[in-house]
Image (cartoon, rainbow, N blue to C red; front, side):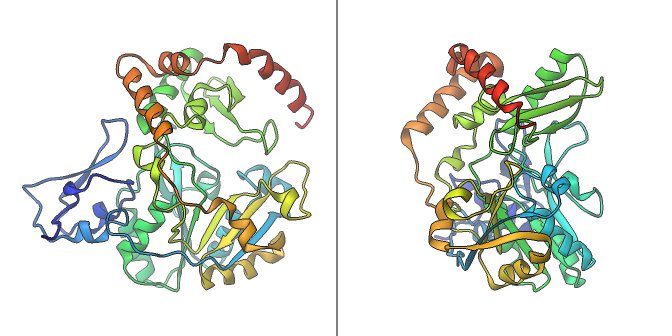
Length: 381
């Protein structure tokens, strides 16, 4: 018997497709738990089956067709400094904007406690730039994208691989004026844990948060850190290996259950896949003194065409696609990692996040290492 709606599914990536496709708005997003979850209102549902059919997780299709790979960085240091890696997203977005188009992507909410979707008609491009290591919610963005595409206007949508899949499945047709970008994704931590951590920092520093930056490059490109600015003028910054929130993410303790066996790690629906080019020394001659280098993989002919358009603005070199696609790999379920994740969540049920992470992943012995790192890294600043 055919599945009538997504309430019958066990797996969910929170891609947003079901929410957007429902013709009677019977689906909403529950935000009270650690992770966003869709909910079907049985009183409104007409059992049309559209949500079940559109779901890219439970009704999978093969979408990946890797064509080319490139490494490079933008020819303006200011752009690179404001980017997570080498400014490739900025270069692509500028092409869309010059065509009179619009760019959609994840942005921080006004109070910095949530990640939502915005667009360049509403916010400047720099609000969309840079990585945000928190699960986001597209809400009804797909519907807005579709309406704009119908007008003939160019659209760039950048999201997680599952969100890119959700949009593509929702649209159910190709649009020449649409470019979809996603990225090499390591999974996304709980929105609830993130908010709790920001609340903790506000209490500790006695001021509301002004901005959050997960890739500030204040210690260089290849050393991750967190930078939080407060309305009082105070700042908090620390290495990712030391910061409590970042540690939970890097140790795979706080990510969404589905992320541990993601179906889109090797089945991208996007036109272009973006990443940090960590193997630039091994696979190319590229070097820009630890400022940031992008890895760009094309997954369609449309993506290849955009590479040609950004070449004048970037130091760009072609790469061997087989070697450069090292980060496109099957997301096999690691039972040990998911076990640690589940154990951590059990601890979290009876205490706050800071106590839980310090109990589960103590770093007392790493204090001296932290100080040594900072002394070395300051030379890069």
